[in-house]
Length: 111
Image (cartoon, rainbow, N blue to C red; front, top):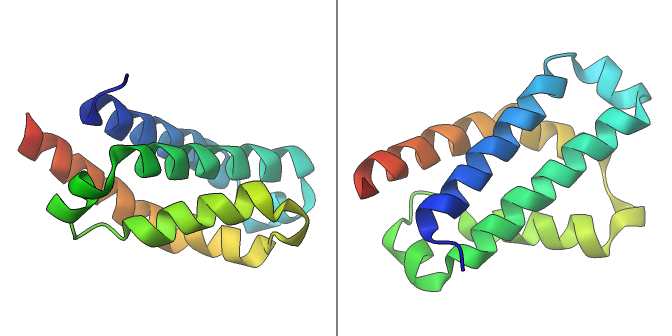
């Protein structure tokens, strides 16, 4: 079983993977199915890692919006025909930088 530090590192690795292709811009994301799939897949990894941290961990780190992160993962996995590309891109632009910073701070705290 992976410990919280490993799961937090999984989140940071997925954020870095998303950043790699998101750097190409919104237009590339909008027209390139492979970029869309890559980003959605890594958002799923973030949500899965977040979910597996558990409620006690979430409660001890309330600055991170764990429930919406897990909810997005569930939508991406179970409602895949209804994925809103604009919402995905908004999460990439607005939410990932904040999440990356928060996860980095938690990692420093638990070291």
